[in-house]
Length: 111
Length: 113
Image (cartoon, rainbow over all chains, first blue to last red; front, side, top):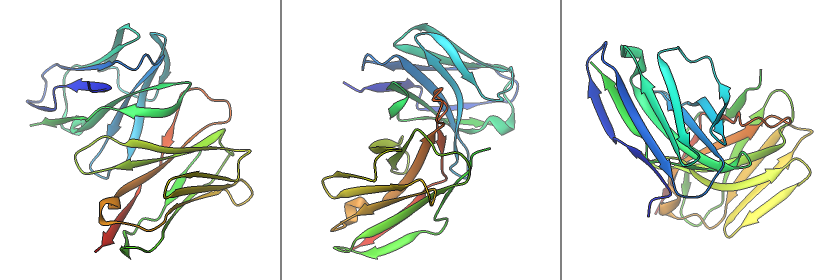
C-alpha cells in the first residue's frame, strides 16, 4: 500500500476553474502538509495541519483552501485558477515534524 | 529570514568515488536538519535527520555532518553508484519547531559508470 497517496496525478484545466486535489496517508501520522514545487524546483510549504488543526498558512492566496476531515486526509481546493498556479503540488505527512513522507505529486497545468 | 544554500551547479562524479554535497544556512541554527532525495517526477524521499547536538550521523553508505558554528551540513555518499544519481535536498526546521520546514533548492548529482 502507498503510504501517502494523492489524486489526481495530472490536472489540466482552464483559467478561472475550481479544482481539488486529495491526499490520504495510512502511516498514522499526526501532521500533514501541502507543498508547491515551481518550475525552478523550489519546494515551498503552503499549509501544515496537526491533528486536523491548521498550524501553518504561508502567504498563500485565499483561493487556496485546505480541508482536513480527519487525521488521515488533507485535501486542497483551489478557486479561480490562475496561470501562476501551474506547478507540482506535493502532500506529505510526518510524526513530530520530522522525516516527512511525500506523495508522488500532482502536476497542475493551468491553460 | 532563514535561507538555505546548496551547490547550485550539478555535481558529476565517477562511480566508486565519494560524493560530497554542501548545505549552508544563514540565520538561526535549526532544531535539526534533514536530507531528502528526489528523483524526476517523484516526491522527495527522507534519508537522514541530524539534530543540533549531533556532529555526525550514518546510514549505510550515507553520512551527514552538522557544524552549527559554520552553519553547514555536509552530505556524503561513499562508493557512489549510478543509481545514486538524483537531486538531494537539504531541509531544516526552526528551533521552536512549528511544522515549518524550509527546503533548499537541491543539488543534482550525476554518477557516471
